[in-house]
Length: 172
Image 1 (cartoon, helix red, strand yellow):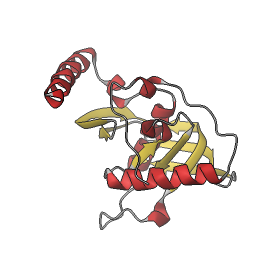
Image 2 (cartoon, one colour; image 1 turned 45 degrees about the vertical axis):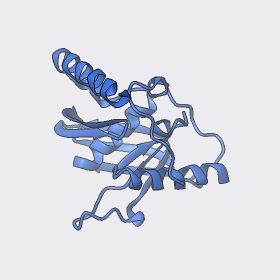
Image 3 (spheres, rainbow, N blue to C red; image 1 turned 120 degrees about the vertical axis):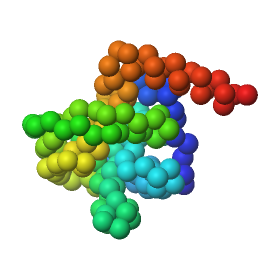
Image 4 (cartoon, rainbow, N blue to C red; image 1 turned 180 degrees about the vertical axis):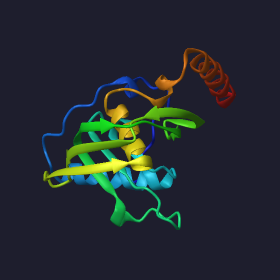
């Protein structure tokens, strides 16, 4: 089932998510719904908080060379923790919760993440480049942060002004 993606400045996007303690059918349904929602919105990642569920859950599914998001490549991460990061890269990011806005963000080039899969089995993944960016972006959501917080003061003020204007126009 496709769920509604909440958008900035929704208060829930500022909430720090809680760890998952039960790996059950309810969790599996949420993960399946998150995948359908992400594909429906043409995203490459989604955190549970973006569908108004404050749990430490994220999914990532990068497109392959043919630009297809194959479900075989889907990463489902529960209670993820970055155990190592190094290097630096700049990537133009967007977000389903901040639709229509992109900006360059500096993040670690290489990370190591520990997490649990949908069955509660511990996993470790090493990620570089775009995959590392996706991990870091989604994990920020779990901590109650958005990529726009990386903007300089002036860019952030410009963004806020444009965003308010857009929200006003949508209400008309």
